Length: 226
Image (cartoon, rainbow, N blue to C red; front, top):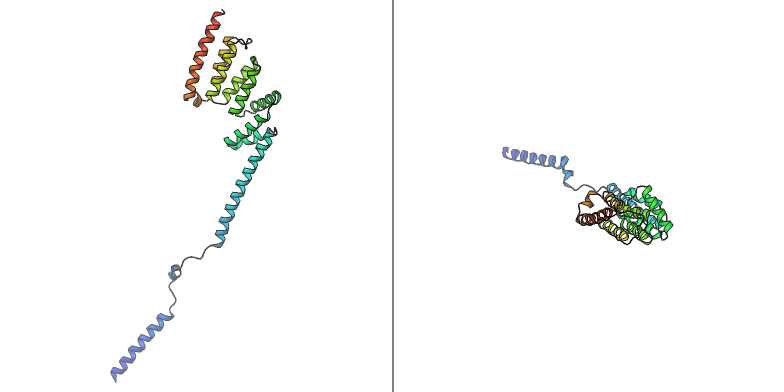
């Protein structure tokens, strides 16, 4: 009898423990077992940011094309807008379009004046066009401008070409209004308009050799006239 009571008591105890464990709430960290619900708002926010950036990029590209189109029609304000962007390629394209538009002496002189008055950079296209314009009707003023724009291009090869062209014109007596001493002073003065990077480059080394030869020739010519 006692054995039956003990057995019954043990069974009841086991059943009680089982019911307790069954009804016990899940631990707090149980929820962490499942992956977090996706943040739908965050996904849409990232998509919105990406769309906004793409729209901004598209708008910038459209504006660049508009500036080039304005320049092809002679709109010089496009150059002033392109320069502050710091986009060298855009500025070069806009200036080249303006050079292409400047197909007459008056238009080219106006562009040259605009660039110098606003202290804007000179690219290869403008420098070479100015040099070609000067070669057609070389004179004292044109020589100074051609050498200056060649130096402003900050291209040692372009400047060397302008120096050699001026020297050849002087030899042919096509620069009769410029003395040998004045021409040498022009060569030396504009040389320092080039940046130190251009002056110290390989092309700058070749330029220095050309200038040395020009100085000797001009000094000899100046001495012979004394």
